[in-house]
Length: 600
Image 1: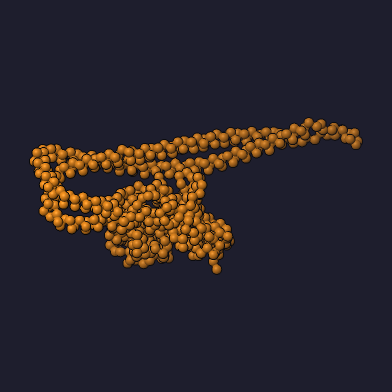
Image 2 (image 1 turned 120 degrees about the vertical axis):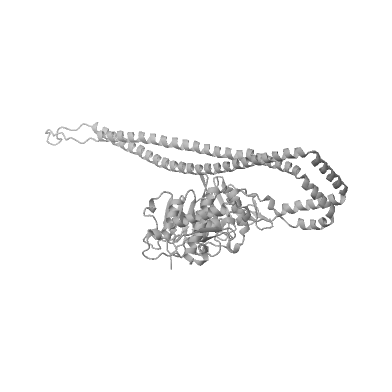
């Protein structure tokens, strides 16, 4: 299952190469101002295909190229862009490809769509008239990439600034959540079908009035002669509706299973990477054992050569007998050491074999999981969806027969007022089906977001808490019955960030296409706690405690000025959590993001 996971960010130029390695799941980046923290956000956004003039930083400082290493299954790819260029290169195990940031052909959006298992040809509506544009990951940037200057906004944090592109945002969100079908809202398709309908109706009315009369007679006769059949067909439609409900449930359950297998696949891939790292270390130790045995062999060989020469017993000068001097022999010690190393080497060989077996078993398990997931997906595509389509077609067919009386009324209306209809046909061609994305969200969407948000407020020590209500009309949150604009900047930033994280939890539970990636710059911007506040009332500490405990399978990158006291005391040893600190001190830790760039 596709996802966006960044292993590292690389910024290079004549000044050198600066690299940031991100954590497996949660990465917290902190440091004083002017240490380059915000460059991280801007560089990643630039690599997603931002305008060539949206420089992440001034290249005159000595850095002019940004790159990032992305994870793609069990392999990695490098995405690279020179500042000021409108092209982006992607290097994987098959070679290098070049993408453009603008235009329909070979657009970088195609690469990121494929990374998420989304068709590059996917078109989504961008206005209520159903006009479409190509899906792009950046369409959803206000969901998974929150800028520092936007966290404290009074406007809805999830929507694009000034609501520009909000319709496309909703369409993109509906697609990743439910794989929403937009074909009925396509303006071009609607116009074509309605133009054809106009021509057909004109010909039908003007040239076939007598046929309409005959059709009317036929319908009346059909209905009069087949009253009992209509009752049977009604029962048949009821049964088909039940069958359709069962099929929809099977599709829903199967989609849920594919998500579960996707999470298992990610887990097994992580285990394989860990075993491969362990295996490489064991092989290095095995090489050391071999070198030690060779060294001890030289010692034993030298000792043997020495003992082949007889020791003189008489002095060559005075011819008196000399006392025999006992020399220490290294043979026994060397032999014992060799025996010990051989024992350890045998144990190590067994361990290496075990690790290889584990890797092989995990690889088999991975293949099985992928096969099982693909089997379910094939069942959905090859069996369940065609079955659903067949049922729908039958229902439409039988329903059309049941609605024959309505057809009679329609024919009578056409016969009586066809002149007015001919005038109105011109208007109907120009009136497309309106795309209203908010109406397409399920009925429980608001309730689930509200409940999740209320839970996050409690986990973050927010007080007082009376209620949390998600407002679908504004696509924003109200806490304790009031809008967030009544709060100061710091608390607005907190409330906005929690709304992003609430939608994250909803996505993890429901989404068919889940990017599993979030980057928030300054989620607590301007939020300062009073001196001496109790830890159980400190919302900043509660916020970071929630992230550490609830990152799940997502990669979350947080850029924020953090006090060590706001983090768990064992933050440096928590699995899958990484803390990166810029100190702005030359003799302590890492000064800043870019090597050689110091604060004046």
